[in-house]
Length: 253
Ligand SMILES: Nc1ncnc2c1ncn2[C@@H]1O[C@H](COP(=O)(O)OP(=O)(O)O)[C@@H](O)[C@H]1O
Ligand SMILES: [Mg+2]
Image (cartoon, rainbow, N blue to C red):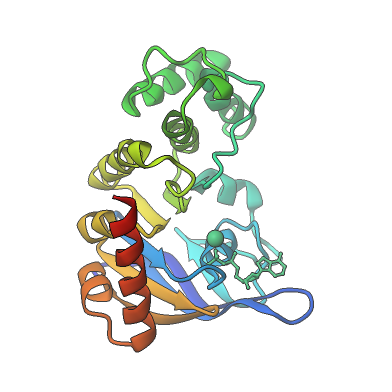
């Protein structure tokens, strides 16, 4: 990897009350403009890892540094973390009683302190960019799942983040809507966004991600070029997992 990593995750552990580890001793770096795909079975710690990166989950050991900001220390500047790290969830998490446009305008005026006019212009550009021109005035309930997720992506982008985190962004979608969301993510990666993506869409991962990691039971089991981790895993655990998701894909598509 060339240059300083923009996201540095060093020996990170998160132990839940009761002693169970969500992640344990995970280290991985992401360079600027790189896409890292995070894979692993349900309960392997993928969400916990992303949540540690944006400060939704405290870190018990190790450290995370994002573009020079230390996350999870006593001195963390949480407002900066919120500005620099955008997150997209499986369940969209839009404000249901706000239109698509308002969903983008509101956080910009609160967190980035933009004027309503600035925020609105920026929001309109971003909604256009994710293919939602003409649907700005719709409420989330009037949008399809794929459209809702594209609003959620645009909303995260509206903050001009340095890094975007995606936690299974397409797994709540009907199959015919998966591609339109992956296309938006592919364009973002192409435009140089740094992304950490939890997904089991292997074609997307192989195509868009430079690197992949495989987690199992909270620990990082494999890490390397995306094609290598997906197509030629070194460990039996990762091989078995890749076989399983290929079989599941074959049934769906
Ligand atoms: N708030 C919590 N309290 C206790 N255990 C949790 C909590 N959140 C997650 N876990 C546990 O941590 C492990 C990793 O969870 P998670 O990161 O959600 O996995 P994944 O996203 O890979 O499915 C699981 O065993 C899960 O049950
Ligand atoms: Mg998860």
